[in-house]
Structures are given as structure tokens and as C-alpha cells.
Image (tube, rainbow, N blue to C red; front, side):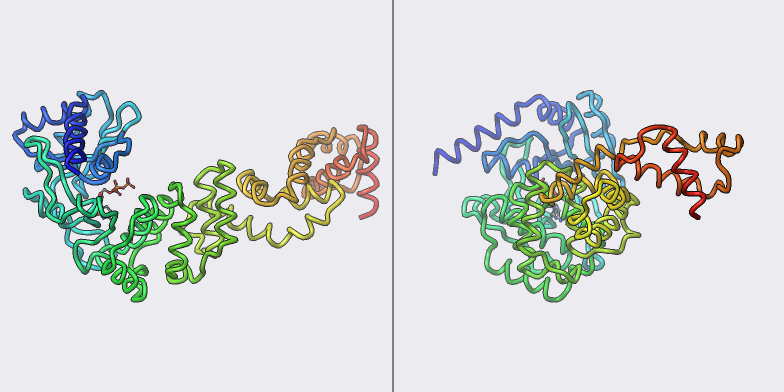
Length: 407
Ligand code: CTP
């Protein structure tokens, strides 16, 4: 045990010697302010994980401090005045800086009101779980751990700090399950009781879809995203929010998408599709489109499975965007061959295009064709061409004449 603690002290000191932190500490001394290492990165040092991004808290002006430090690190600084926080991006790493603050939740689920303070203990008290609520004082080289977070880390426990924690901020319900699965920790008994009560009493309904989506994104990034989603579904969280549960077969599909390195944004949309989320106005245009296309695909799937003619495959798949096709390709093994065929045949071009059609009309080669019918006849030609029925320009012209006469 003892050697473990010495180890920790050593790794914290090693950490402090990193140029970025050394610079931040120097600057804090110049500003005559306190500076602490907090949150996830500190927790992760204790868990012996690799830490690349830092989380600092100061009792000074974040805007001034952050811009100066960013300058020294040759990085970029983004400041969020409403939260008194900022982010430095340097060498593709992040350094988060926050003002020591208290937070007041005026309504459950709403974003808190932020009040700057000087006392680190008060700042720690507003946080989610004990394992995220201790600090390392970088000036005095000591751990500040008023809620025994280090002990809970050792005992592998997720524990909230006060009874209203899940009510004030129901996103912590997602966070508790996410951390428990990520670290293979247990949710402490009373915490779990309060978590279940907050679900039952529908506090999840108090948070905006944007915040829920953010949590879903963070979950999908996790290695054990499947276990997290399954636990959340068993706790009936999705039923409460979306009116729909996620089943094992749904999660299997998400696993497949992830194992095939499908972009996270697409996996996220597929998750919303599985959850029957159809308030499409809330989504970005492209996202809403994918959900509509997936609905369409569900309707034509059987026809596509039966389709033999290439022109039929083309007709059924052409309303789908590349993103939706990617999802379907990953999930529907029995349709892969047809999707590959589609990718090839969609490139086929007829020899006659709109301009040519107009010329033929002017020359009187074809008659009885209105501009509004151009796209119809061109599609007709394309389908014939896809099926290999048109080989030359002459054959295409003949086909147009036949088409106009038959109408
Ligand atoms: N926090 C909180 N309540 C939340 C979100 C965050 O109390 N709903 C606090 C926690 O102390 C957390 C810190 O803010 O450690 C930083 O938040 P975030 O970056 O989301 O969490 P990390 O713990 O860094 O998690 P991760 O390892 O997933 O980045």
C-alpha cells in the first residue's frame, strides 16, 4: 500500500515537471493565484492511465490566464464566458482551464448558474462523483480530497456527493453507468438507489435533447459502449426518454457498425433511428435525411432482396445518400453484392443528354416531347442502358421516338 502512495506522489511530481504544467504553474505564481489539477486527468493519473489532456482550476481571470498561457504554448485559446471556462488547443492536445466556482441549479436538468469562488473545497463539492472530486494543489504539492475520492478509487466505487446530485443534473445518470463500465467499478448502493429513483421519477425528461445527444456521443466513443447501452436500456432510461428500449439485436447492429469503423456521427444517427427518434426538426438536415432514408429502406428491403434486374436495383437504391448506403452495407450482408452492383451501374451515362435532346427536338428528329418530360425520358434511357439494352446513340434515339409515340 505504502509503495503505491509513494508511486503516486512520484507520478504527480513527474506530471508537474511536464513543460505545459510547469508553464502554467509559473504563470499562476506571476498572477499570484492558486492553481489545481482536477477532474478526469487527475483521476486517470491515479488509475495509472495515460494522460494527454489536462484539467486545471484557478481562482483568477481565466480569460487573461488562458490567453497568456496559450501564447506561451503557441496554442489556440477558446473562452466560454458564460461558464468561466476555456480550452487551450496545442500540438493536438487540450488543456481545460476553469475558474474555481460554485454552481446553483435553479431548476432540475437546466444548466447551472456559475458563481466564482476562492475555496477549492466548495468547487469540489459541486461535482458529480467522489472519484472526480479531488484536487492536486500544484503550488503546495498536496492532494485535497474532502470526499474520500482516492479511497473510492481504490475500492472501485462510483459515489455521488449529495442526495440531489442526479436531480440537479440527470446527465450524471448516464455518466455513472459510463464510468462504472469504463473502469469496471461498482455503483455504490445508495448512489444506485438514488439513480434508479431519479429515473423512475422522470428527471431525465428535464434535460434537453442536445444534452442527451452529447451523452450518447460520449457513450458511443467508449470501448464498452455496448455494455453501457445495454445497462441504460435495462434501467429503462431509453423507454423514459424515447419511449423505446434498445434490445440486444439493436446493440449487435451498433457493434457491427463500430467494428467496421463507421464514422461515429453515422452510428449516432443509427442509434437515434433504433430509438424511434423522429423529431427530425431538432436534428441537422443531413442527419434527418439519413433517418428518413433508413425508414424508406425498411419499406423497400424485401423488394430489393427479390430484385434481379439491375435497373430495379438502381431504382430502389438511388434515393439513398452515400451515408445511408454505408450503414446498410455494414449491416445487411445479404445485400452487399447488390450495393456493389449499384455503385457501378449508377455511373453509367446515356449518350444522349438534355442538351442533345433539345437539339434533336429542334432538328425535328423527335417530336411530341416537352421540356418537363426530359428527366423522365432520360431516366427511362438510363434504366435501359443499365440493363444493357441500348448500345449506341442510334438505339437511344430510336428508344426516345418509341417512348414519345407510346405516350
Ligand atoms: N462534472 C460534473 N458533472 C457533470 C459533468 C462534469 O461534476 N455533469 C465535473 C467532474 O468533476 C468531471 C469534470 O467536471 O471530472 C470534467 O468533466 P468531463 O470532462 O466531462 O469529465 P471527465 O471526468 O474528464 O471524463 P472523461 O474521462 O470522460 O473525459
